[in-house]
Length: 102
Image 1 (cartoon, rainbow, N blue to C red):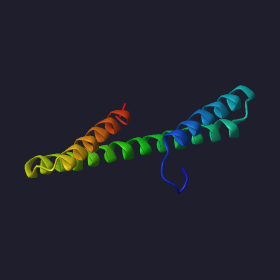
Image 2 (image 1 turned 90 degrees about the vertical axis):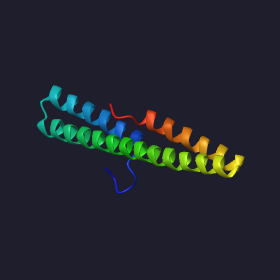
Image 3 (image 1 turned 135 degrees about the horizontal axis):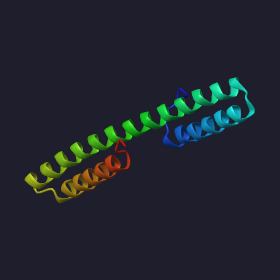
Image 4 (image 1 turned 45 degrees about the vertical axis):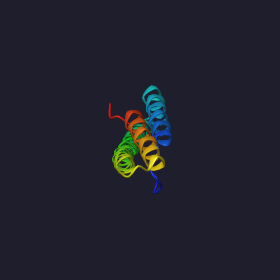
C-alpha cells in the first residue's frame, strides 16, 4: 500500500498483478518471482479490504447524520433539511451496501 488513502481499484490491481507474477514464477521455477507475487497479492488484498472498511464506515456516518437531519427537519418543519437528511441517509445506505464485507 502507498501512503495515500486505500483504494479498491489499486488494491484489486495489485492483487491480480501479484497473482500473475506468482503464477509466472511458479511456471518458470523462479522462486523470487513467486514470492514477490505472493507479497504483492497480499498487499493488494489488504489495500482493497482497508478501502472497503473505510467506505462502509463512511456510509454509517452518512446514515446517522442523515437520519438526525431528517428528524430535526421534520420536528422543526424544515422540509429542505428533512429532504437533505433523507438523501444523505440513502447515500450512506448505498455506500454501506457497496462496501459490505464479503
